[in-house]
Length: 238
Image (cartoon, rainbow, N blue to C red; front, side, top):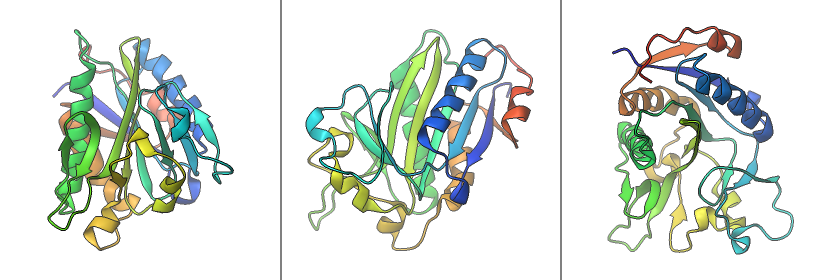
């Protein structure tokens, strides 16, 4: 398998990354990937608490009053969501094959999230017309619950932004917004659904494995941005 996907753990736990710092790093790596200087890569991290509002965010979906965390407008698709401790965030920076098929890429990310949930024994699925990984309603009347969100941008043929898998994060943050602009569903976590504690650390290995498989790549791990920038591009197919 010629295609590589290089993973960088960019800040987890006590080293959670402020959103704007993570965005700056994404942009730097995106430029390098678009220029062909580095291989496909994926940042894995946790953020300090933040609300991010995608291009399609409705004003009525935004928090009213002091939400307790910054609200940052971003250039990805989708609407408003929250990031913070207990949530595994992944930013794949991947050069898409021609002809570019954004929907197929989103489906691949969904497949990776569904597979990761499955490794813990949670049967997640897709919901037609809605991106992400979902736990669908059950016989006791529970509404559909989103366990992983996806929001991306493609520029110069290279992806930015990505996914957020809820592991053991505090769900009350979502009470202050209309998450993803969806009013007839709710947000959940692996921990809440399974009744046992699933941490971000627990989710990293299966998340990497399923993402690499969904993108048809082999996994490579680097320890720093400096090492990533020095990683050779081993294939022109990326």
